Length: 261
Ligand SMILES: NC(=O)c1ccc[n+]([C@@H]2O[C@H](COP(=O)([O-])OP(=O)(O)OC[C@H]3O[C@@H](n4cnc5c(N)ncnc54)[C@H](OP(=O)(O)O)[C@@H]3O)[C@@H](O)[C@H]2O)c1
Image 1 (cartoon, protein in one colour):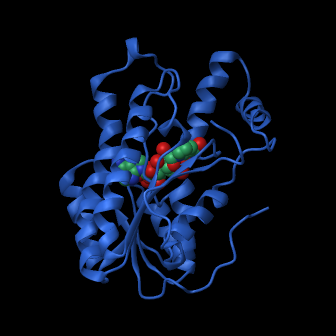
Image 2 (cartoon, protein in one colour):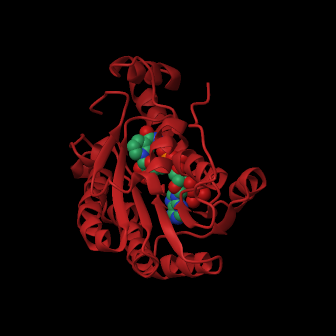
Image 3 (tube, protein in one colour):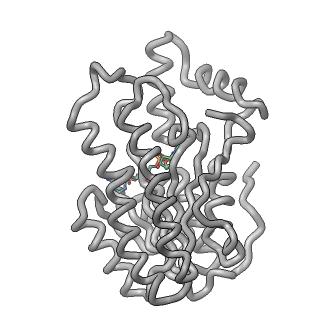
């Protein structure tokens, strides 16, 4: 059953940038913000998925890899064609090696993972912060992870990047607060998206199980006995992006149906 929150058009007139909008959590968040009236710039590499989102929601496709500072400048300048981007949802993410202990991690994977999961959040945020300062309103949401607060084996780059965005968020929250801005992080537990499916498939292959069996175990480990739904994460993101969330700033909010992981 879809668990999208009831929505109204409270974001009419706002311009929002949503990264990772071609899929999973970012896509669900982009759709919710668009339904609430925001002009959404939907950022990811896969043009055809972005076009399908555009057909469904009106979100504007921006097919680009956000791995460099220059690309992030390009994203913000495209958004500014539609007005001042004062909402930024940093959902693009790269799992990298989620199954390699430190002995087998590589510099290249570390750099690529940090580039998407942390550097791009910094680059996009520092530009959007200028729009927030000018406008007197702003919402930045980082999609971190439960792996942003605890260590987990064999995922050093991913864990480091997800801890990093929480630190970035906590400092940024102070900087934009005087200008009506808030910055928060959402920390989901497992959600069955493409990225997480890749991990489940690897684990399944290692243990001689099916991916469904791995997901059944993950569901069993959750106090609710099920896996978190993508819409449940998007509901929280969409609330944090709204004017109603003005009192919530600098927070790392776990969305996990009660699980610590
Ligand atoms: N699923 C989970 O269990 C879980 C749990 C905790 C946190 N998270 C976090 O949630 C966020 C969203 O992940 P998801 O689970 O929704 O996975 P997903 O469905 O695989 O989505 C990942 C998104 O990131 C985009 N992306 C990846 N590399 C990019 C790049 N270089 N430039 C631009 N976009 C890029 C992908 O689009 P393209 O491939 O089209 O570029 C895709 O839209 C991530 O930050 C992830 O770390 C996920």
